[in-house]
Image 1 (cartoon, helix red, strand yellow):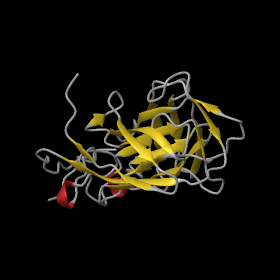
Image 2: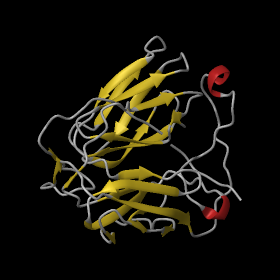
Image 3: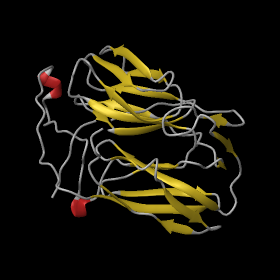
Length: 256
């Protein structure tokens, strides 16, 4: 059985500092990360599943620019569940790693506005880099982010002739909501990470974090519908050249 609920995003550039410092949601203000050579790196893998009744697909009404936005049905993507209740779009990351590999230098970070949806629904951008918003629709969109960290709140128009729009981001922060005020149903998420040890689950609920330096770490998940275990993270120990499996079973987050 498949189900869902709504949101997507991304950007580009490279950090040349000796360390990066996070000061916002998801990481303590004193957090620092230093890129270094990794010897004997290991791998963390796992599957994220959903426990509970899966909501039925709810179609979203397209009430603006139907010639472009109405070509395909729109559904809420906040809970996308596959066979075996596997959960897509969950972000899994290390909370306390202080040294390790650097971000790749040949990767771009983008979010496309295509069919009046953010693709991908969940995107991760390295701290200090930019998010490039694409406009494949050829109509007016706007990028409205709702971050709590410094520099992560913005509302910028992207006209139809602006196919690419570099968007600067601020502090490290997990779970920044992004929307479009022109098309109210559009929604997605972006997270700004101070290190490269993270993964977003695929349609099978799978994630993989590679080249992790040997040691014991706190492993955290974040998912828009199910919340986070940031206050009670899983503990994982990586031996040199080894691998460890850490699965997660999530349920609907309690209302605050």
